[in-house]
Length: 340
Image 1 (cartoon, one colour):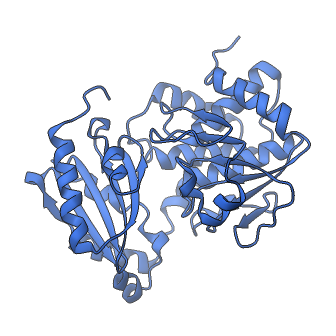
Image 2 (image 1 turned 30 degrees about the horizontal axis):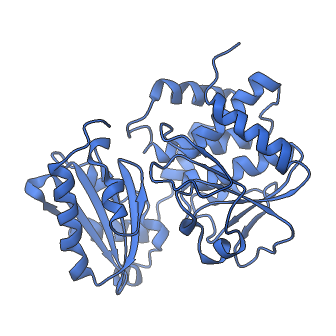
């Protein structure tokens, strides 16, 4: 038999699918302000379930961003939390580290999801059944591995090429276009099989990275102007303020990927971006190594994520927040997790 990718997780998924999902209505829920791995995972799982005896729909607090909306075709029922009507649906979450990530309304409707599929190291195992693979670079990788394993063991074909394409998009985006640390021998094997099953890497790259708007570039210029080096050049933090959106005409979704510019500077170990939204703070951190455990830094500010990529959200004046953030970063730089 061909080597399997996630045999234990595939067994859990198969059990939940066979015993609880088949013949039922299911809401596949992702995190608010969804990224490529979130939307890719929602659509991939929704389509796979619909092909295999489940009346599945996608539900999210927010709509897909401009560069991701091409994944949501007429084959995929996709609702925002405001449009969704509960009608006996069971909940399956993807790419969510904790329940707060799905938003208040969906959390009140589904206090305990049936199944949680995720790869974040900070996941709280909040569902009745949990599939957590922190070794995976993306939730899309986990789903792809499960689908491919079930094809090998049970003869269940992936079917619709969009399933493979969406899994690939999740992997490509959450890996930073294959730049972040990962088990790449495994990742590339999966991507090769996804390509054979219908993934379109060239089309994905064009949709994701070649659709800049002029307003986004103007916002990027302001972000560049805000960059400051800290901790003897080991940290670079940029800031985007509410007025920057208003004056450039850019959208909050246009911020996607900005933090990578701060991280990419030579000598910088941790890059970050802070959104100053008038007393509300949203931020993202990226580390060049998993040993910096930026998820632990984010956890200090009501956030979480991966060892090398994390985010946070809280209410606090910017002037008070930044010194606290720099203090936490300095402590992590002084005490790296060499086991990562």
